[in-house]
Image (cartoon, rainbow, N blue to C red):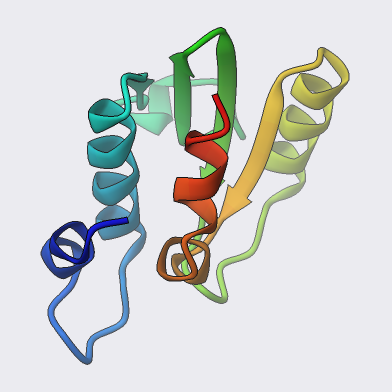
Length: 110
């Protein structure tokens, strides 16, 4: 992961918001050749549907994004569980996954 991507996602010394995490993941995914989908208005989506769907390199990845202490709802977990049963890669990503390089490692596994 390039330092410039991380620098663009949050000012130094401030916690990364869920929106900043989402923007960072979408930017990196696009750079790596993935198509990204994020429901624009969750109020018109099925309750619990994941924040991101990333498709590319023969893979489909769904990710629920949370702040460091954000909680996954029962509806969100139900969707993730069912999608995993359908052999779709599912993740719950938090800012520390970004900063540790875990998200980049997952996306580069193509």
